[in-house]
Figure 1 (cartoon, rainbow, N blue to C red):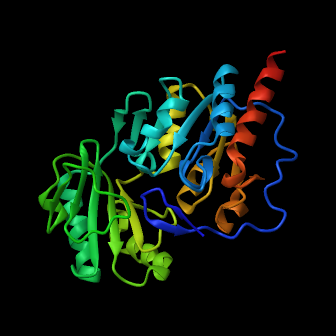
Figure 2 (figure 1 turned 90 degrees about the horizontal axis):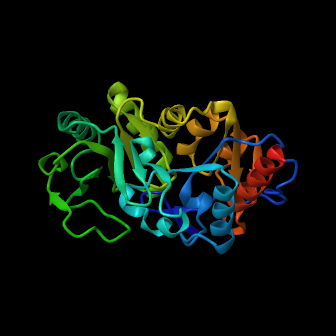
Length: 302
């Protein structure tokens, strides 16, 4: 079985262990904020929002509970969420590199890499693997740019800029640099580990679990850092945050939050890091969490 990764690349879904995902013994102390990943977590395996999840989002809003989406997706991939956020809502996109108003798709804040840093990264990457074996693309607030040989599992947006070298088509800060290897996709974890060594302290490498793909953001840019920064603007402490995810790039966010949840289909390392395991995304695990959270919030006010 495959499912779309946050960047759109095919990803083999982890095996769901027998008996995992029972939503018993969830916390009784209400959160002030729920932070959830999208692909493989809130969204169903086909990338849609289920009717139950849509209702749970509405129930959370009715209870006065803040919900923020924290995703590796670029902001241009949020349109499907708009009907479910009552014309507003916030998403932290590109692994925390940008803050986006879901209702308008307006980028409210961004933490991108300047062109000279991207050029340096590209040079290091090509020196390590060779220009014939790695191909790059860049997500920016102003759109998508890619090298001619970069393979995307999704249709490239109309108007995207393309060239032989990514540094020749950058027009603004890069929120996320995508690095795809032409090697064996089964060596994805080893590729990401090697990419971390190549990048050094110039940037941060995230692993959303997509085989043969690394995602690079500026120094200090992670889902955790983005969530911490946004929560601070709302006056919310980490202890009052529930966070849920499924992939390795969710680990910093889960470690930062006061209570960490994983869906049952999450990678084993993510399940091991979580305080609680929810039903799988195919079984509306995040809806279960939101329903419970809304109930605890209402009970605390009774």
